[in-house]
Length: 227
Image (cartoon, rainbow, N blue to C red; front, side, top):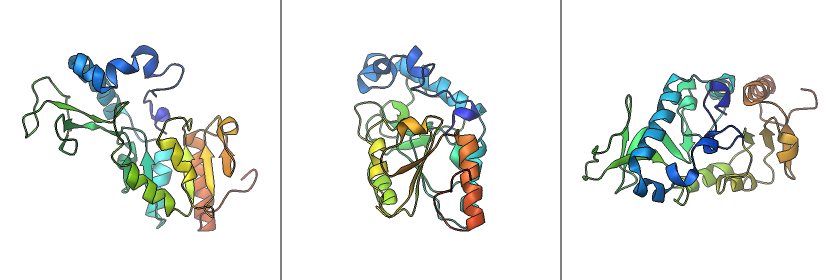
């Protein structure tokens, strides 16, 4: 969703994991072994987010909400571009890079309006601050919130994901059987599963087209061929 805003993805062929081993910067073990390296990695991610701007996909979803549609967003991204576009109901499954959290108590969080985290920066309980992101091997605290939202959705729109990261990928199967499911991704034809309508478009192109379709119809429904 945020790649078109200039934020480097993790899993693409030229993504972040190509240059930074997962086990070194995105696991509790990597944090215990070399916290300085982990902090500098996320400082770089934070600065990239701060310099990025919401793209047409982010803006279209915010406009859909502004038009009176009930829009809830569940994101694996750790940036704040949905919020900056104007979306008000955002569930961050994998945390928020513009926040720090306690190493001792996961729900003790602190905004980072500028700068980063240094060794020696402590939470109110006296433990080292760490990035507020969910690392490999850690629980996903807001997965239950995401499950509840998907279960009651009238339509599920999935954007720009390989449907390979668990448990987030399992959400597509949790929607009601009556709820249409749409996947917008350049590789949608290869990624779609039974019951999922694929649109082989980028987020910046496909999401605005879908939103305009729904605004014209004044209801959420699958688009027709060649819409």
